[in-house]
Length: 236
Image: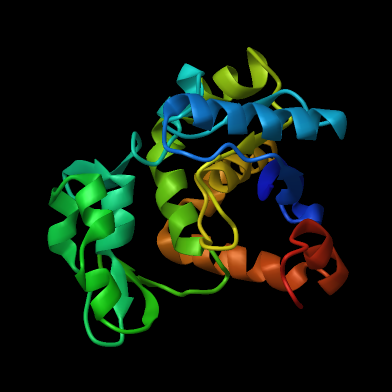
């Protein structure tokens, strides 16, 4: 058995994204067929709770929209070009004893994620991207900024694909283990849908500073019991 989350778009009052955790039978192994079994198990469990259909947001998705929305596919605007989202995230980490390691912007995304310096430079203290410092809290704020920056130019097309062609009730990433990781592309995708529905995406993404202050202000406005309800794994 394994516990995996589903991320459901909500509204501002409810925290924009609701996380629902499900215990599912887990098919071990790295073969693609095993990944598909786990995706089906998670989606079936959510459907029994009334959440369907779901979109798997990862390179393992059997839907084109899900693969295109994965972090390894998306590119973040950078200077006069763009770089893979995964590279931007890993290369922007700032540690007690080093970083950001911006040379990671220009390597293979999987190589960037495995770079030894990311484990040898001490405690993570923040992020720095294009001269802007991003804090560690609210949790996922930098990853969400990168993800939203990557999808922003295609926002209208994406909304048609994931809310008009099929009205998805939520989003999943079968590789994401909340016991080991914090940032999740499926959660960021759900945030994108919520902000688009409330016509706030462009407002929030006007600048990194506006995004940081807006998210921080929003998180302060959520009552503690709302935070526990939407993120039951957190202790407030």
